[in-house]
Length: 196
Image (cartoon, rainbow, N blue to C red; front, side, top):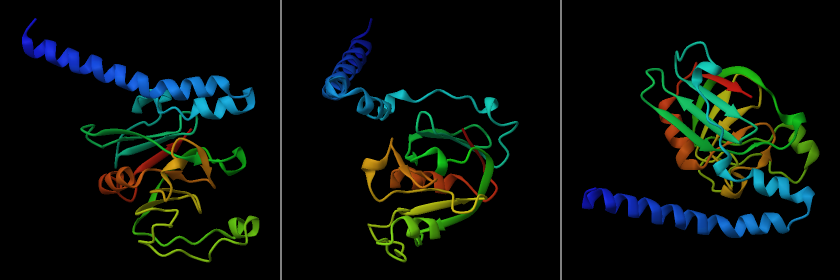
């Protein structure tokens, strides 16, 4: 065993211990919660990502492929040539009523998108603004939006990082803005999307 290998192992070991120490308070907190709250706290754990192979969801990678996993609250991306694979935590629809599953595709890429609440959103909450311009830090679409072929459904950045890993949207999949920006640069109109 070389000194270099020992250093790497020591570094990895100390990193794992540090991550474990960081996770411990949330594990203890989750155990102290009533049953009806415990599920939401534990499910928010980003380490709950499920591993996916693109072949289980797509017949090919033409134009790239995105898998939105509502169960593990993660978005997966594979580039057409398989040289890039991304997995990011995301927000998912808050209820089954807002959840749409199946196959769709990206139909429009929007840089610094303007957000206009849907008619149903305004009906449920009349206090919502009529619109929020792109670039406004309060914009629920964040810095990038990728419209899907389903009306009002998008993959987009987010205005509040606390929504990541939660059931927090009206049907969309929200990513941290840096993750949305990276994805935006990799996809194109026609990128296939599968929601499970």
